[in-house]
Image 1 (cartoon, rainbow, N blue to C red):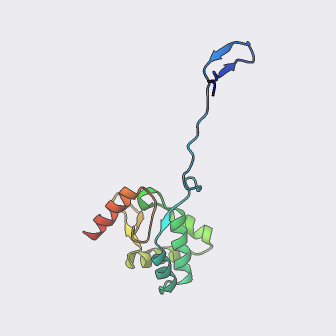
Image 2 (cartoon, rainbow, N blue to C red; image 1 turned 90 degrees about the horizontal axis):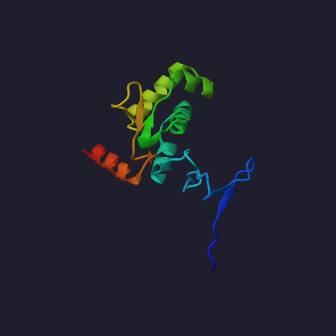
Image 3 (cartoon, rainbow, N blue to C red; image 1 turned 90 degrees about the vertical axis):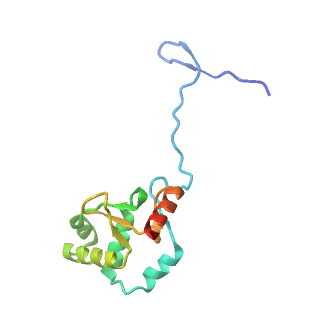
Length: 138
């Protein structure tokens, strides 16, 4: 196969520019872009069979929708309450129940924030997930 030489032409001047200028965008390997997390299937059954109230489940899914890398969750409780159409006190109670069950963990790195327990789901690298699991076990 013969080699080809690609060039660009400046349309306003007609000047031949050696080489090509290209825009390269990062392609998501999983098809979801930045909006993804991996979840343990047994956790889904644990959630489904738990004694969480309907409001607790809704708050849990809202937390999952705000999941950042390394499982950090920083949300404004009033904003969550507004989006879900429930009172902020209800959101606060649900967060306390989720924390008491070990689903949400206090985030030691950020005030008024949580981390999702990495046993349930993870958003981040596999290497960091293993490290978070080991840290939790100690």
